[in-house]
Length: 598
Image 1 (tube, rainbow, N blue to C red):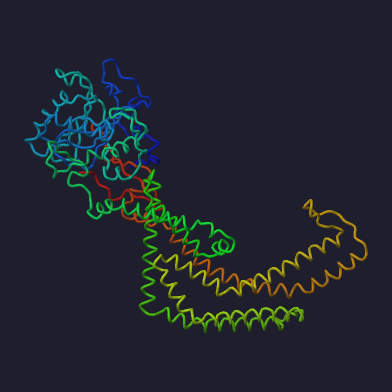
Image 2: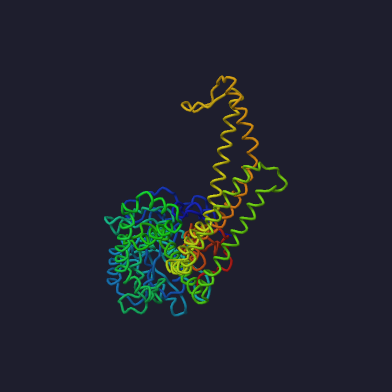
């Protein structure tokens, strides 16, 4: 049996917990906070007899007895337990530690109550001692959380103290115990941005509503998690880092060196960007060539990526940080693939083999094109073509093939050197090498592009001529000024000349259409190859590899909300829930394999 909540920053837990809470319907807390009674503690806006929520970290379920340290959220009637203070301790030192945490984190951290873990029979008398600590650390309500010895039973109650003389004079509140994973809650980023600097530490007016206040409290209390059991401090705590702080020497060295390196690279990239934006490169021939080459577009995109990655500005939100991380991993993968390709090309001397095989391949392609044109100049597929126009077009295109073959043989001494520099460009990344390959294919098939352009222009001219002469037969004409078709009266000579031109264009159209169709198919073949190369380049540039890695290794970093699972729901015992981070993914999240904390 479980309850799922989406959008934890928007929704609270009050109405949801009422569905599974034992007791009458009037036990549901009022969503509108009521003012405290006269003489009551200003930190509490709930009276006795209400249902309170206590968020308890699972890492403290097996901790020794002590004090519960955390934050009280009166708007939600919730207590967020952050750590457990163990014996022995001096109350003054505990208060000094909490004051330092409040000053560093701007969170109203205080002592919420006591935690009693009865592991042995001798510790049963410890509960009476813990009950008297409410007179030293006064807080309303005062939570008393206890785990029974030798069982998984829990007891939790909240009392409102009226004075040291009669600590249990007032009534008790019903408490709903909610377990949460402190590490996942801290790293899930399900909390609003940091509070403004002028916000006081003891301010209980939470800027975030609902469960976002819980996530915000844990995220801003990192100063409390800096001490572990290896520190020789006056106060011993239990929290998610009490067994040792998570750290890495490589990560710390990278953080230390990231500032100067990013500053140097940012200055270098700004100089390159300023040089590339010079007016000389914006002149017509250069600007036109740069806009047509895929290599220039990829280099411009790579420059923008590096400028964003090595920018000295801090990310404003987790989305920008995720974008920079995805971009950094994408660039690293691109460079790694490029170096792998370069090593493979030079290890087996494939560049020389490609240079030697390029001229025979070009001759073979030219020979096949000549056979195709000779087929078109005859009777292709049994079609009757206009022989005069067919011969003119065929010879025209055969001459272009001859020019292209001469151009390839003229460049043959430099082909190996050109291919060597192309392979060397793989150091900048596989995408740069693929972009250069796309430009080389465009240059090698430039004659096919010319054939397509010639055929397309000739075909369009005939189509426009036929449409204009068709309007002449209908007594219409195209009004250039008004951009519309108007009626018009033609004399006999105009109709006669129009009939002759229309007949000529109709009989010449099949020959032109056939050439246009063949060269369009050849052009589509080249465009399809270049499109596959550009698709691979875009895939490498935009694949969110960092997000995919987080999804596999740390999915709680991609959280979209929380869900709850009921652990215990028995009469006479507090309702116990387990709060889990809900992952924003396509794959369905399952609650199998979860067990009770402790």
